[in-house]
Figure 1 (cartoon, rainbow, N blue to C red):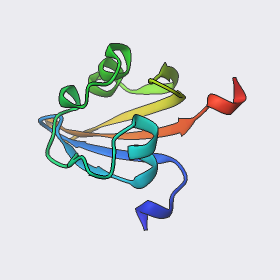
Figure 2 (cartoon, rainbow, N blue to C red):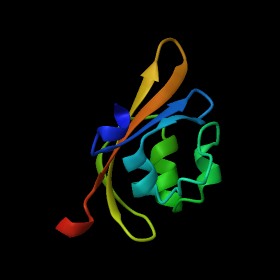
Figure 3 (tube, rainbow, N blue to C red):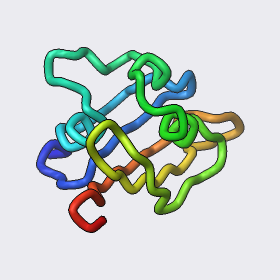
Length: 99
């Protein structure tokens, strides 16, 4: 399942709401299990501004380093298009211990 994947996975819909997030994605972004993330916009997550900007960008991002409250995260994004923006696929990797 997606929860067994070590990388953080996020799928944002066309309105930039979280349609899917796995356990690693929650952990890397500091989203507690008690927080209902599905259906919320990225802006509602109170992430650092540069990270929020990367997740909301219309162009793909490749191996960008971003800081959260306690981690260094490598971010990759890829828009899903088909005439109009349908969403964004995001992968997150913990880079903290390598710094």
